[in-house]
Length: 244
Image (tube, rainbow, N blue to C red; front, side):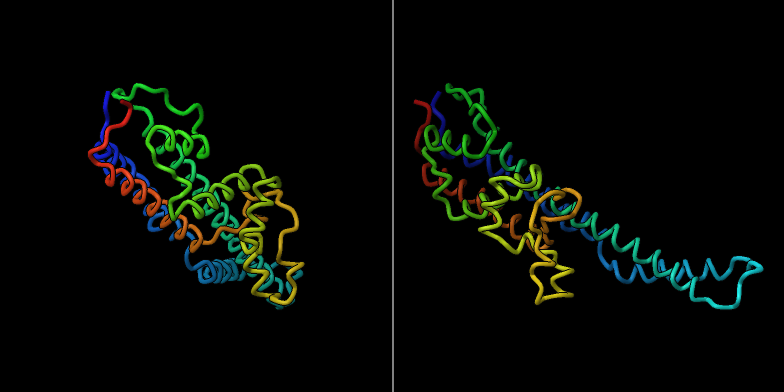
């Protein structure tokens, strides 16, 4: 059955774009703010722990030195900060992975329609879907301006899931900064051997791969731009017929 470019552009604009936009906005406005102000929150926890320790009945061995209380309070604050900071990094990595696979699945789903008389792609992988778009939709996804950043996100997703491997090697060549611990880099800017991950072992534990909030925002913009560019391709062929 003939399908027009106008029909396909509407499917993306009304069925795909809002979902991806909702995903990225929710991550940035509802989820990531949970990790804001960690230094101040850690200080409050340390102060509360010091007060708690100081309120406990003194033992016979207590000599009036509150140094141990201060050490215990500091450890409590540091434990909170380190745990939450690791969870923040893990969350950013997981949501970046989710963003890429959401985009993959939605683009592949566009190839499934009762009006189409060809089989959908054999896999949801972006490369497979891109070949299908070029062959059946006459749209070359790889030629779109945002493809490079979307493909970078693919490497991030693969590195996060599999650790060391070909994707990690390609990503390191493209974005070496993603393998640098920003906290250690700030403390020891002249010692890259200490703040650069030499191996990618625990990216989903907040180690070895460091996706910042700014990186996630950039990937969010890139996926939105990518979808807009695909819509533009179909709108340019609004009256053309496909599958005829």
